[in-house]
Image (cartoon, rainbow, N blue to C red; front, side, top):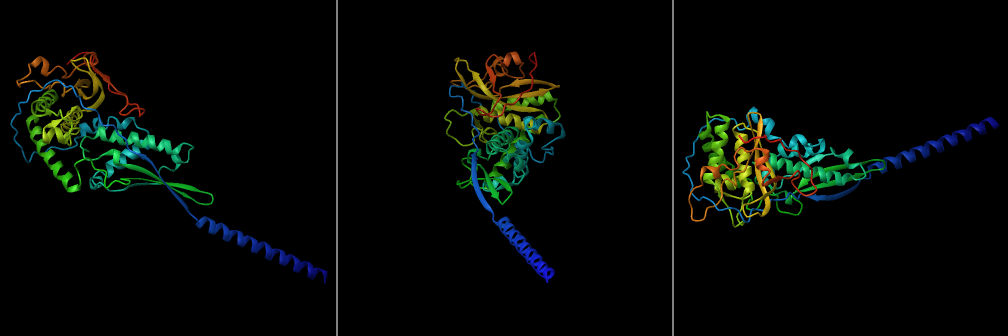
Length: 370
C-alpha cells in the first residue's frame, strides 16, 4: 500500500516537472519569437567639397577645336591601371573595404538615386563593440570618400544626402544588426542638377565621346607623350569657373563636357584620363599658396612615369590672363612632372580628405623634376 502511494507521488512529481518544463520551454520559444527592432540613422555622409580658388590667376580663354572620334576600341579598364586606380583603397581596413566594394558593386543601381544598399549582418561583430556605432560611422566615412576619390567617374552622387542606418533586432539572448545605405528623408542622393538615371546615362555618353576624342590624340604615343598631351588638352580646353554657381564644376563632367571647372574638376578629369590610358595617377588635396601669397584649399595630381612619381597641377598651369593671350612655355609647364622639392614650395598635401578623417599616405615624389 505504501509502495503504491510512493509510486503515485513520484508519478505526480514527474508530471509536475514535465509540465513545468514544457511551460518553461513554451515561454522560451514564445520569448524567442518576440523581436524588438530598433532603427538608428547614425550618420549622414559629410564628404567635404573643396572650396574653389577664389583668387586664381587669370586664364587663357582660347579654346581648341574638338573632333569626336567614334569606334576607337580601347579597354576602359586596362590591366596596367587596375593597380593604380585603387591607390587609396589599398589603405582601408576590412570594414571600410566592405563599404567601398558594395558601392562599386552597385554603381549602376546608385544612378537611380534611391537604391538601398543592404549589407545584411556583415557588421555584427563591429557593432557588438561598446562604441560600435561610432566605428561604423568612421568606416563608412573612409569607405565613401575613398571610393569617390579613387573613381572620379562617379560624378553623380551627393554623399551628403546618403545615410547609413542600423536596424537592431533584439531577442531573448541575441542581438543582431542590419545595416543599409539610403537617401533618408531626401527625395534622392543624386548630385545637384541630377534627377534621373536617364540623365546620368546621357551625361556618361557625352563624357565618353570626349574621352574617345582625347584618347585618339594619344594613341601610339609613349607614356610621357600621353601625359603631356592630356595635360595640354585640359589647359587649352577647360576654363576656370570663377562664379562658383554652376553645376558640375567640381567634377570631370564639368571639365570634359561643359569645359568649366574649379581645381577639383581639373584634377578628377586628369585622373580619369590617366586611368583610361593606363597610367597610375591619384587626386591630391591640400592647401596651396598662390602668387598673391594667399593660401587656399586646392586639388592637384600625382602621376607615375617610369616607376617614379611626379606632381602635376593642371589648374595652376592654366591661369586666367586678363585681356586674353597665351602663356609662355616656362609658365605653362611650371607644375608639370615636378619633384617633391618643387611642389612643396607652394603645395602642402593633406593626409586626410576631411577634418578628423582617415589619414592616408601618398607616393614619395621624385627628388628631381622630370
